[in-house]
Amino acid sequence: MTPKGESTEVDAYAWINENLKLLGWDTRSPIRYPTGQVYTQNEALGNPEIAKFLHRDKPENIIKITEKFLWVVEAKKDHKDLGTAISEAEDYAKCINDSKILKVKMITGVAGNRHDSYIMESRFLKDKEWIPVKINKKEISGFLTPDQAKNIVTSDDPNIDDVQIDEKLFVQKAKEINEILHLGAVNPHDRASVMAALLLSMIDDTQPNIDAAPSVLVKEINARVERILNKQHKPEFKDYIELTLPATEDNHIKLRNAIVATIQELNTLNIRSAMNSGVDVLGKFYEVFLKYANWAQDLGIVLTPRHLTQFAAYTLDIGQKDIVYDPTCGTGGFLVAAFDHVRKKITESQLDSFKQNSLFGVEQDAGIASLAIVNMIFRGDGKTNIIEGNCFMKFLTANSKDGIASAKFVDKQSMNPPITKILMNPPFALKKSDEKEYKFINQALNQMEDGGMLFSVLPYSCMVKPGKFKLWREQMLKENTLLSVITFPGDIFYPIGVTTVGIFVKKGNPHPADQKVLWIRALNDGLRKSKGKRLPDSRVPNDFETVKDIVRAFINNPSIKTKNIDEFIKAQSIDSGDGFLELVPEAYLDQSPPNEAEIGKEAEQMVRDAVAFLIKSKMEDEANADK
Image 1 (tube, one colour):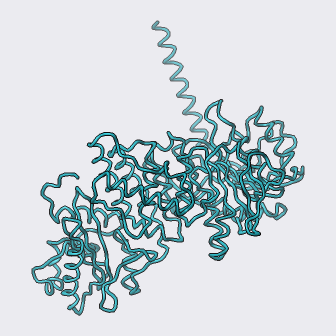
Image 2: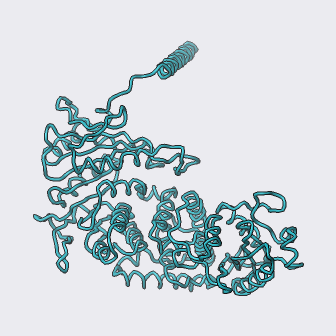
Image 3: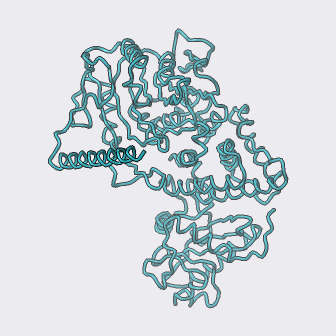
């Protein structure tokens, strides 16, 4: 254990203030600022009404939820004193509630210090009884946002369902946790599995004993993980998620502190409540944790953005009777999106059948496959048919389970392929020796029944390069129908800088010469890059939202009338006279005539380029003359 030194309740001041501020509270004093919402211990008695009933007593903080309703926070320096903190908060509330003007409806006890972390519990006053505050019927472990707190006190209901995701908060916490694991000397290759283990260990109603010695804490977390994986019939992935103690005693302490600090950060996100949500809160956090970790890309973990996986599941309109496959499933993003899309449309019993019989995935890296398993466990199952392996050596054949159409993995190509929908993002071939992306598509199509639909992300180059890439495009059109091609934003996979497209293909019907293809240039997805992160920005258009219903309708009926918008969208058949067979929107979209401003800007740039060239040439001539 880390030496504590002299710890007092003062240690909690900065922590409470920091977390409230991060959640959107104005932590300035209401005494001095009209919009302020947080009284510190020494400021609370500056409010005459509070002073009238508290006299000289004062809690650590009083939060002003509304002009009438208050939230009392009391802190203690040791975890064991959490009950005392809550009891004293109740006493403060009881005094203030004698007021006819102010009422305390919420209290929170905080216990801990900067060395051993902080834990907290919150209560709500209903019918003269203090009862736990919950999100999705799970007790909160962190503070609430101003809107959440206001919703609780005005509705007189201490439970909130399906909270909205604050992506900026998730990014901030993911960044902090990555730094904590770095300082804890957790190997980059192990950080994703460490996070998976900690999240799994927090599924139970009781949390790991963070006051335990390092070896005891690690053993407890591993036991929890093993129990959950056994319950989910996936015991073989235990070794990939299991925590191990470092070789030296000093590093035991480092790891223990990193685990404790990470659990604390997860608690401040009310992560256990997120696990019980119908909203993809936990999946979103896991995405940003991996996406903004520099080490993730080094390990080949390239996350398909969640808004893209959701777009694919929506446009393909995944249904209860579909059998869905991702041959390069990574951490399971597309399968999660398919699962969530179907969940909105069917009953719980139908969903049970779907998640057991209709989701299939292969991932070649066992460690990453374990993350996909965990991701689906967080969703409430759906991981049964996710396996580790080489997708070129794994094949699917039709199968029936209790009279329900399904599939199973076999060792050779089946004559009866079962898949109806494929969603995939094959590994980008960064070296000449890498498997080309189109080979993954061919293998996936071989597992699909005729008439099935495939969506795949591809590097832009696959759809324009000559040689073997052109031969593949020709062969694809001889055997299948190309329905739509969409150019995506250039930085959609930031920090990976690869320009990509999405293609929709119908299996088994040769592409008719007069078949129209829906060409779309969707260069805006509602996100803006800022300080190395891509985050939602209401000022940025969202082309995905604009076209999703059009794409969904078109791939089901390519004969429907589609509006032609210059440089954005057009339905047109493939140009048979194109000797390069460039299957990208930019080859088919109509161009807008340049306006006067654009012409002026282009001319100005040309002049600048010419001047720069002349200056460079002159400098080179002078340098050569001096030799």
